[in-house]
Amino acid sequence: MLSDTIAAISTPLGEGGIGIVRLSGPRAFDIARRVFIPAGGKEWWKGNPGYRLFYGYVSEPKSGEIIDEVLMGVMAAPKSYTKEDVVEFNCHGGFIPLRKTLETALAQGARLAEPGEFSRRAFLNGRLDLIQAEAIIDIIRAKTDAGLKLAVSQLKGDFSCKIGSIQKELTALLAEVEACIDFPEDYIPEDRAKTRGKLVKILDQVGFLISSAEKGKIYREGILAVIAGRPNVGKSSLLNALLKEKRAIVTEIPGTTRDIIEEAVNIKGIPIKLADTAGLRPTDDPIESIGVQRSRDALELSDLVLFVIDAVQGFTKEDEELLEGIQDKKKILLLNKIDLTGAGRGPAAGCPAGESPVLEISAKTGAGLEELSDTIERMVFEGKIEPGGNYLVSNVRHRDILRRCEYHLKEALQAVEEGLPEDLQAVDLRAAWVTLGEITGSTATEEIIDSIFANFCIGK
Image (tube, rainbow, N blue to C red; front, side, top):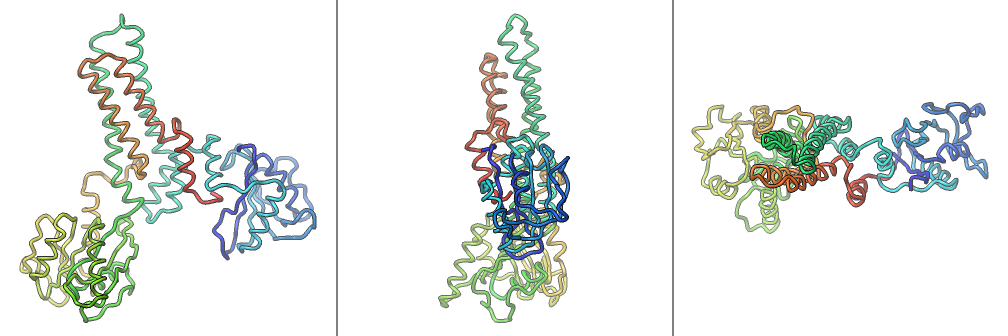
């Protein structure tokens, strides 16, 4: 596979200013030499052509037909994304010139790249580890500045260094335990206490990474926040206010919203999918009934409920019944329309908030929305993890591997504490080391590697 030269369109199809056709492999320069005509006839391939940009034309070698005017970027191995010779044709961003440029490269001996094959080659050639490769996808899919910052940190290798550091400590500990097996006459009883101390230290580090997974997952994937309540309490107005645009229809007629309206919003760096739902009430209208059922389904899936109450009417029996149905959900109670009642209605409204925050807002004027944003951030993270760490776990695969590693470490610790033989300790220590290596790819199977790069697009 690595002996092939691969090619693909690396930019989204459609009209644009620039489109890129990328080649990588041992014949990349040879193919470029055949299809690229440099302006002025300069023999660009002579000397050291790497890390330069050449102006000219892509042509069909047999007919001499000019396909497009391009800038050709040339990167010589090993200082390229794949650590192979790489050529990129910067074409005009239309479907036809890109397709014809790609077809011309394929006709000269290149092979169409598989999804993620450029990044896979970067991994196989030691340019990236699996954490960094997955970070590329996270950068592309980042929904917020915080999510982007986390992905870039992982691409830089911050998380990889942390995993490597833990693996190094495990290696040293395993070597000590195995030395006790090979040379029992040199064993000192105090060594068991030292082994226990080192194991506890490693377990603490793994435990911290696992504890960061929830926050990392939120930055990567976001949460679903459902706006719920009785009809005509201002749910759609709240959606519009948070989005800062008139997305939902707002009228004084109850039951205006018949279906769920979903939009993405960035609140304090957290990607949130906001869902405006139909007012929850008994109804004989068949269309509204469908909307109410969809609202209940959305509430079941929600991570957070923004429960809106009409501050003018106060807390009603209907509100009480609706709240009973979402007792187990994280929620914020919002007394809306304080522009009509004035502030200070919270205690008088009689809301049985329990541990849930109660905020006074006006979706119409924007009053209280900044406090709502702060409350959402505080509730999402629950104050358990300090923000700003570079080693946040944002990938479910990484979290699951760390949990398996933690299991083996705990088994090894138990063996130490119970005075079991060192060879039993070594079995779990070795299993923890191998498991941890799956994160960076040093011990990952071909099946794991295939599944990761299958999620990449062609051309990346």
